[in-house]
Amino acid sequence: MSTPKKVSGMQKVAAFLLSLDKEVSAEVMRGLDPKVISGVAEAMTELDPELCTPQAVDELFKDLARTVYQRSGVRPQDEIELHTILANTFGAEEAERVLAEIHERRRVEQPFGFLESVPVGHVARVLEQESAPIVALVLSHVSPTVSAEVLGRFEPEVALDIVKRMTTIVPPAVETMLTIADDLEQRLAASDSGAPRTRADSLRTIAELLGYSDGETERLVLEGLEGDDEQTANEIRDFMFTWEDLADVEKRNMQKILASVDTRTLAMALKGSSAAVQDNIMSNLSSRVCEMITDERTLLGAVPFSEVATARDELRKAVRVLIEAGEFTPARAGEELVT
Image 1 (cartoon, rainbow, N blue to C red):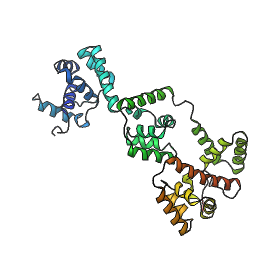
Image 2 (image 1 turned 45 degrees about the vertical axis):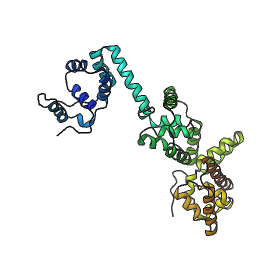
Image 3 (image 1 turned 120 degrees about the horizontal axis):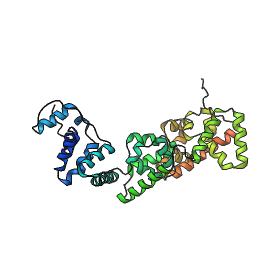
Image 4 (image 1 turned 90 degrees about the vertical axis):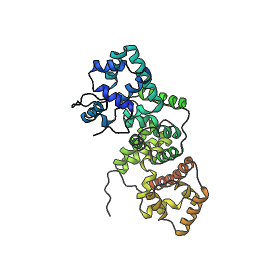
């Protein structure tokens, strides 16, 4: 096997030094150009996997015209181990300086990198308090896995708005990015997994519990809440019946819902909607009305998501009126549907 061409010189030097005894490695490092020491030290923490095998180490020794024999593999060093190597080589003060330089470089290159090691639920709770542009900025600078998991914690409409912003985002100045990252990191540190949940979390939990209760219990709870705080009761109802639930409403009830909504509101509400919701709505309209809605959507062009959300609220209000009148009963959580 030959050492991969794509591996950098810093990586090769780092792997070679880590294959030596610590005392020998420290002696060799003292002879390096001071300008490359921090680069080599950083490479020790981020070794290419192909350099971490005994065979790769042997190739490095061949390249350096040293004795060829099987060596043990090497591995990336954690911060404590790296500090020990640097302190033994240059002293504790210089070790601290090099590590600080590495941290600052990484902070500039990946300002939101610290989120990769934070529980997704924790990240989502903090980001729910931010505006959509800030959330889009943060999620566009973390791994796709973390970004997708965090988006999954948002309401579908909000997640869609964030994704759209991510496709057109223009990163601000580095100083601005670092300020946002610092603020986010401080708030994450100040709140742990046992921190108070957001109001939306609490209302969503209540909605889920009511979804599993019988209809009479649901009615009594919501009527009791409404007497004290009508807005809260309505917000819980919204969590109990989301926009995506329209995809599963059967024909007769869907027609009742659509009867009280004008074509412009429908056209606006369908902007960015999932295919399932769109198909169920359009299939319950006449061909003439479908054409009118299609024309309206074309004329509307690109619109702010806040206007789409307002239009969708109109449909949810229509659903709420039917539910309160006893003319429509959504499928309850855990309830088996039969045909």
